[in-house]
Length: 401
Image (cartoon, rainbow, N blue to C red; front, side, top):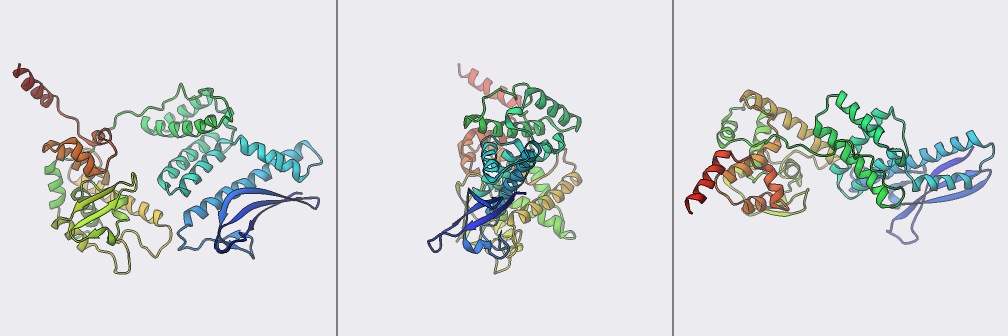
């Protein structure tokens, strides 16, 4: 029986991160397997030999990802031990470590997807990490939780997976979403030269079809604004946050949720978009200030709205729960007003862009106002221009001849 444990080696320099490593013991022979994971001494429980996470730690997500990755590595070491024992009667720590390094060089799909998600989490790109984990969860179900080497991802397997997703009645864009993230993981291994590219995705759906526009007309925005929801505070809050997004040129919900009081300087609101890190500046109109005043967070909170409680850990989970509740109430409002498509927070952003375009605001100004990196991105948000409008423009041009 081989002993495998996660260990911590503190830095010899005070205040610096120490290193995590795996201790492998077999027949009294001790070996160490180094890792790239770094933590501080106060993040290690020396009595229990485990990583310790304070609920208020600013490194909560990073430490959580390290715990998950090291647990995966130890499971892998155990699996290798089991495999070696089934083929040999005599194994040692060196054999185990050699096989472990081989597997690390040529990862399995499940491990690769988890590793990619953890990397994005450490970079603060939590939403991107979640997309990989969502894809992994779907593919795990398809495989019956049986992992496979990346090189074993073949065209027939992916066609079977695509058929599996069709049988679950998923939309084409959802199927494309899963395939694109699987392909991205596959390409990472190809780019590193670990395997040759056999192009297993050439026959499956990876393109995205155009989605219906989610913009509302100005009269419908007014109908939402004029609703009397005083007897239903949660629904009223959802409506008002929707309007705040519209008033602030389509500010996304994640930016509203994490908007800080120090983002307001006099009559101006400054904030950086979480998605692009672009700095935006908005003059605070009275109707924006009314909503801020109505729902302002406690004095002790750094946030403008009481959506994320600063003294409770896992802010990301709070934000996601709030987004779900608000969108659920908005969908009810949309149904009550007879809208043909679901009303969500995204509609506020699309609506501001399309209404601004209808009013003759130049595309470049709309793009800048929404914090887009390019006008091409802005165009996605705009409602399709009616053919008669294009015909009229063409007629005016021809009349100049």
